[in-house]
Image (cartoon, rainbow, N blue to C red; front, top):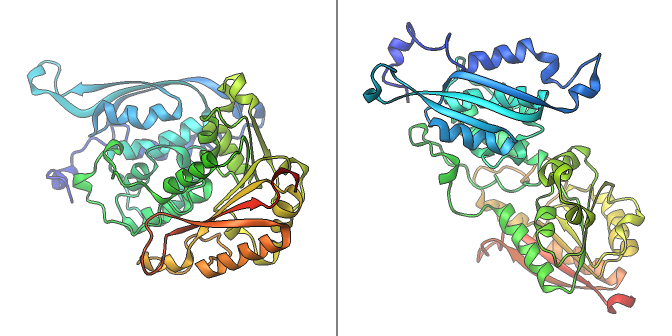
Length: 409
């Protein structure tokens, strides 16, 4: 709804004096090439983190200093935020809705400008122009290098798009392409009430499907006598991060065909600051799963988590040969959406993700897995991930393959 001062705001407001969406738009216009990460004279400087200090003396922030810290700290900034009093001469009047914010950090300039472009209107929870579908593209472009891995990405997208559920859902789908959360945002969308907009810390306690799936894969790996693991199609590295946290896994490899995904994984894992002993356990590389690659071989377990459905059906035979015929891990864990469960998503028309080439029913998945076992000498155990619906089964289906004959096969 509109604020009580909406009518007066048309004539007298703080827009010319505060760090609002007006400033964000001007930053984008004036620093266009810097925001794109381009510098003809010194390209290496544009590509590198540099020491930055940014001061905003009058930032509209109804959530107070805590919200500013919540949004900027995960991005690597040291945040200094103080509420601005209504009037220094009358301290009893309390604080205003403004924050005096100073950011310090070793950040790439393009990232800093894009973060300000998105987060200034998010903190203000307002924009000086009408929000249309074009804003989704702007959000994704500005957030490409950081938003998919931000712990408050849902909160940011919702506020940036002015609480419009349709636009927010579209943004979630696009963000999923940047990370590995393909199914996370496919729960039926809930209309947001801007007046009751909670900060990210008070989000719903229910675990999203991508978290349940990752936990299920980790449980299976804990059950198996596996000490070396390769994540084939690692996305932004969430599973890899969890594997590194468990010292039982001596060697971990992660591969993805997407350079963008590997960049996200590098940032998530903080490779540049990773302790040497932890770094020595990890190999991260680009590779296609439909071409034989010697680097895939020699692991106790291979994980293909939400990967097969992104492969064109005619290329599935190639993937099968690469993984089960040539690399031949002792164990392989494959997860994929259960197409039967899609009826439980009322607003879903078609498949769960625009990049899915197919989605299998349980019988189709079982048939494919059985054929793989017959051709390559594996056995398979099927499991579900998520609530097991009595009519349509779980939202995600899992196959745990074990190579017949053990280590010598």
